[in-house]
Amino acid sequence: MGCLATVKAMAMKPEVFESSCALMMVNPRNGSTQINQVCKYLRANASMTLDFTEKDVDTRFKNWTGSSLYDQDITPFLKSICVPVFMSAVRNDFLTTETHTNDIYSMIPGIKEPLCWIEGPKADGSGKEYDHRCEGYNYWNDHSECMLNVLRMYTNVAAMKVTMSMSANRPKPKMFERSLCKSDEAIVSAFSKNVTCVDNMCCSTKTPKDYGLTFQSKTIESFDGTKLSAWEIPSPHGSKLAIFAHPLGNCKAGYSANPNHPVMNISVDYCRLYKILVSEGYHVLAYDFRGHGQSGAPETGCISSGHHEWQDAAAVQRYALK
Figure 1 (cartoon, rainbow, N blue to C red):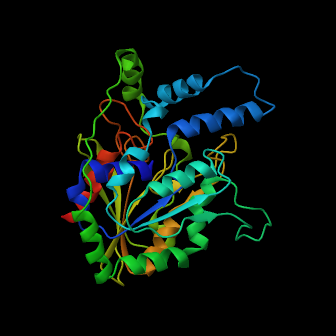
Figure 2: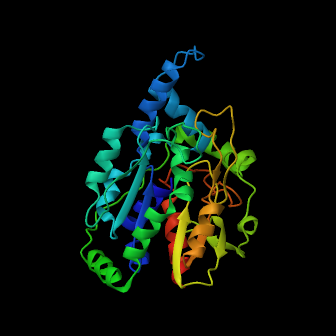
Figure 3: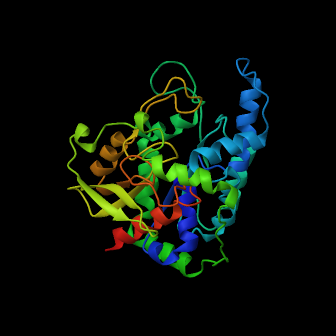
């Protein structure tokens, strides 16, 4: 979600990203690949006896969010990226493939660091290997130096000049929004009346205060009027700003493991990462996408993996410029 929303926002509202210095992408993927991979997983699971198709999987997602997984395609927007990119991905993530991840990386224009594959033995000493996409979100809590080296490289004055040059030469593709068909109206209507958060019971209840950080809660209005919940976490050590966008089904604090969920069965802690960034001299602006955490649900009831949330990413970026 965070990757697609941010990259699409760069295409739709490029003016709010003109002062940005770098973009970190973790576990990017496309909806069509996810559908295929989920079907493979279910068919390989001996406990699953239901007969289903890719269309069934997409229908379930649409019933849950009001939008189709086939809309969650990052590739048309990659050419609008205007800043240096650092991309990482869990090599054995079952929701995508190594080939597909390499395809996304190859389409990123301009300056980019080598693709960082998250693999090998975990840092916890268990002897187990990284093989889960949620572990890719926690990975930088234990391997922060590589991430920080990249941020240091691209947030100095010289790097900012390179970034601005890339921004001036950025292509501006024609974009369009796909509306929901009338057959979805009943689903969307019911969804908009009931949704307050995706998997709200599993969203982490941690706050920056748990790591000794001071913060302020803010409300940011998205481009369609949806109210977004955000944290401003100041750093006494510098003046740079890191904006954090979470994945689908998470919130700005993270995610508490649901042992019965095939994907969200590992806890994710983003507040620990905020502590690392603040210590490095970055102010942090973290926010909940629409329908997640403490943010409001949009009037249409539609959430997705970034197809609609680009409005949120762009609005937070605009807020940061004030």
